[in-house]
Length: 168
Image (cartoon, rainbow, N blue to C red; front, side, top):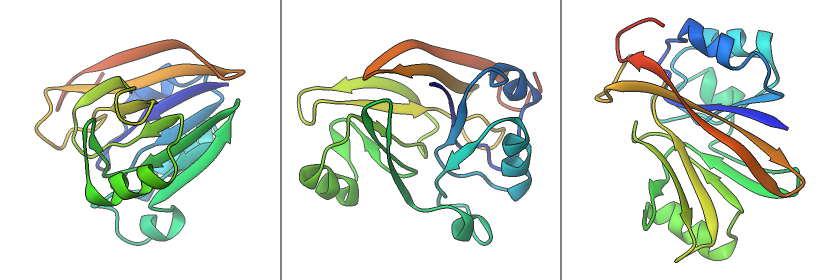
């Protein structure tokens, strides 16, 4: 299964995302969607799984959960918006990780792209796709594309969409 992962669009959907995600099987949005129109456009392209973020009020926080826990290609995946990063997870996430650690933990919020194996504490893959929108302090808009195949992660790609404020 090919996954297109993004976060922190803040109401802006760069047209290049459509091109980069045209061959994925699913799109995952790790919160701070910003406007329902972003979801509508993504859903026209591929099935969408999303969580709401701290800027997402109604109707987004009614349409999507705060946490999404799914099994895909043998992987236990947990996606939430505010998670912190290894080893400094936020208290809510840290508590939940101590109870049940997923294979892949995805979050957004920081606008900082980070892909890291957290083998020291939790033996899981940590994914934060950075920010795909124009709002925030990040310099470069980023998204991630990867494959999940029979409990293997393949072809992990970081895609730069251009500088914040620019349209690709």
